Image (cartoon, rainbow over all chains, first blue to last red; front, side, top):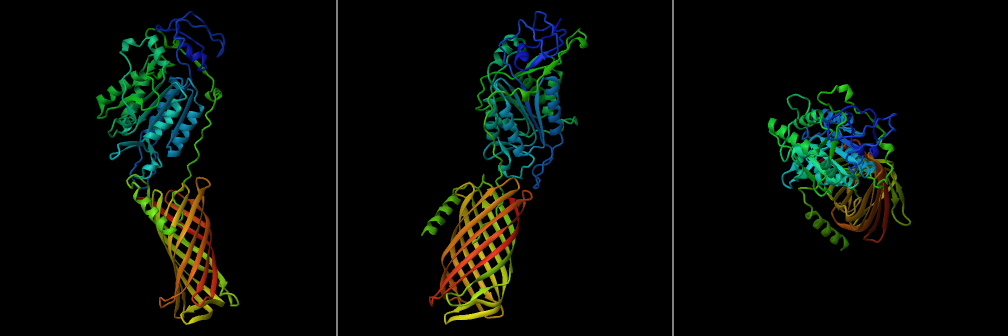
Length: 346
Length: 237
């Protein structure tokens, strides 16, 4: 038996299967062996030929070292660990070829990174943005914020407002096929509106993956709705939400895995173990068409088959060499507005 | 009239600011000036020039979004080894020389950023010159209008500048009697270095020019040129 990844991974995502062993799954084939590394792409039958084709990119943000001199934003202990582990998993198990890890990001760092991500993303790409850090909800206005490490006490202008995040993510979403925002912070649920999608486990057919991969998606997974969320879960070094997110990504054994599946499992696991209810849905006003972000696992196991024989190798051309599409000529001008200019006198 | 209208606009602008969501900052500042005072006592009269004198200024300002208000107090001494500005009394001009004059300034101002980096401000200005060791004091009081602005250079450095004019200020002697009227203008330019979100230092140059016309129709003109360095401590409220 041989395992094949969907054809789209070969053709456009610049991923080539080199060694293919065994897998008794929904992807069947007409036996084609790769003759040389990275270039011998063979015809594969019975795969969802018209599935979305694109590069997997991620921006991962983890904020521990808060610098607030007013003491409102205390340092966190797990956000960086969370971010590093998520980045590692995406790179090594899910074929993300463009992963930028931002640790202890200032407001400007986040905005610049989102801008850069938008600039280098292409039409068929799959973009994941993960944030772990403080969040804030203004009770009076019901507006939510991400809190960067250079946040200054209660000065909201030093935070990242949901509408700003939404604008930046919408800008990315307008260029790519699938966008997923995962926010592990307090009150992160204020970013989303709920939307029902997904089907029962038994209906995850090849046709379903093909259908949702070709519809645009702008999804979000949030650690909490409008409540505070915990930092260190059972001294695991991870927040509860990311602990179960990582666990799901690690233990998943399906070659293809939708966000609806992932979020459902994570939500149940978190809610069953801590006093926190994660939420998922779509990012408001960002062009979601009820598609699905699909994770492709590069390292699956097959019952009854020697793990050494179940091997998928991918040869990836660095994503920065693939950005030949038109680049958005939009740049964020550095925000150098000084906080203080001496008062003028006559 | 123009000043009055602008003052009303500034007040209206202030009341339309939603304080709950606007940035509020309180800033304390200190300024050290190295200045020279020179001028003339009118056509056919003496010129005068001081040694370089120093002034220390302390100020506090409050900023609410685009609106700001502040108070600046400044004091210094100028030593005239030779001729000095004439003393003006109701009885007439009294020549003055070899004196030390202590100058005290007060600015009470309100301003508003009508554009992102440019503001207009109104300054109630008082300058009191006290002839030390002599029982004479002269003050100048006026309402000025100015424009100020800044240009960020990079994350740390910002250029700033201002220009303002006071027309028909009142000049009084030490008996609070009006002895004349005068105009004044000031030009300032400098740079601010941001140490961090709370600490700032600045340096620059400033020139102040005064043209006085006394009740006896004689004139006196002088200017004070200064180099300054300053420090500001600022925080959000």
